[in-house]
Image (cartoon, rainbow, N blue to C red; front, side):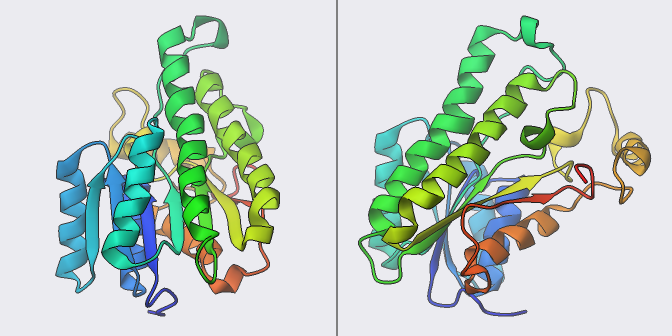
Length: 255
């Protein structure tokens, strides 16, 4: 295991499970101090425990990404505890109104996804950039988008795909806005991965595996560790010239 992030601090939102937790663990394994954030404390504490059991250092902070004040406090807590904010991963997101055609999307579900998946990323990015551009070395930000936002060819996923397409566009624009500040901004767009979001209603793990054998060119879902590896690459010095990209990790589904 390399130690690309020794002496650096990484912040991960939505870190209580799935891709967020895997990403937090991966940063810790490569030497980073990690701040994990989310709305519910218990799963965050579980992530911290996993990091500390492996010899890492972590801090859990509850925050609602739809509240700018929460995100400012989150960044302040990160810097107060570990001294800097070198990497941020904006992973918090929700999937609602899945399976419903555009004409039937409930307004409250639409607004909730926009608030969390789009506005939440913007507000987090704003708080992160404000800190990063004041410190030597700047920083790196990785937003989590989705391959559904790349092509939008899945019926019933219009609302979710719209929000994730917005994250991709936000990433590219913000990357150009802030590269002169020393802040690199990129995105990762996962395809079907080993999280609860990839299950259809009533589907078992065996059912999903069978469906993925033909639905995805590689014949399976991506592991959360594979998604985390892509995030760490974009956040690392190995990607020093990568700015404003959306790295799709989907087993060939959008090829």
